[in-house]
Length: 284
Image (cartoon, rainbow, N blue to C red):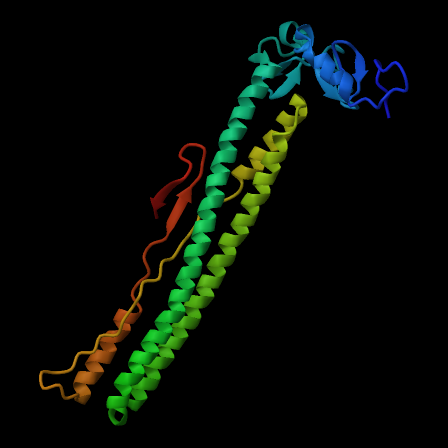
């Protein structure tokens, strides 16, 4: 609990410290301090963080950023110290640059989140289509087998079993894929929340350190989406020229149905949300 240095009566609790004025400021005096044109560029830090804002070697304010070592340094470090031969820029410039990068990454993450939502909707639609396909095929097959039940009773059982087995397998695959995409969505949402929290950081050194860690975590994630579109299928009946079913004709038609009912699935699409080409769809 640190009191404000400018309150005349009972002092209010200070919220930040001005390293230039070397004074602790409450909320009201902080606002007045920032309104003065000559004090707008003063270095303000959260209480308790001021020691981290000074160079441990020169005890000077950390006003620069070494792009080679990715650390905050003071002016003495950049001119005569161990970073004199490195690429050093103003801390504020590096802060603005990284905030711009953060904004672009957040935009890409938001686009990925939106794309993931669309993917989940498509997966749900595909799952419903699998169930509808099963019902459609079952109904059509039942009508066919009512006409030729005595001849192909065993064939009916075989094909219905194949359809049900395929539905079970497809639904299991779809459930696994939905869980995978949902897990990626949760990871993306968590990453987005972490990035959102970084936008509220005003401490440049803490921001740069946390942002570097956040970027490393994001780079380790696989933000590609695999989606499967299940097409509507119908059973084609192919009677002979006299419209009279025969055993060979029926067997040929039903065997052919199996290939039509279970076509090879289309190749999945992956979504590239890298910084180079966010939001682009590419064919595997």
